[in-house]
Amino acid sequence: MKIKILLLFLIIFFQNCMGLSYGAMIGAIPNTNPNKQYAHGIIIYKNGIIFHKTNSPGQALDAKLVKTGESCNHGILWLISFGDSSIQQAAKSAKITKIGSVDHEITSILTLLYQSNCTIVKGE
Image 1 (cartoon, rainbow, N blue to C red):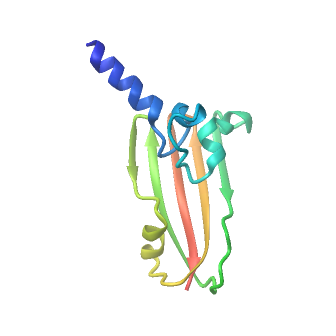
Image 2 (cartoon, rainbow, N blue to C red):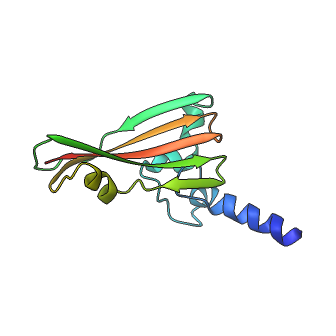
């Protein structure tokens, strides 16, 4: 029983694909969150405990922005995470071959109840 509790603690502590990551906060693991500040609990400071939605624009590249593709990763209770929010999947969803910009959108409901991280790719 103690091993199960320890494993659960380690999974929550080192979870880093989306949302708050205690491991990234103390520098124990790298911060892989697409919006780096969100691994440090910034949602709480932005009055987003009940509901929070933000869009972080990425770098614009040299391509026409005629198509838009999106891919998302979803998390429930910081315990279950599913989806593919990669740039490649977002580009593939809209058949984009030349990427013009990459943006990230985060939506959170009750902070740890539900969260989605979406990658939005625009290009041609």
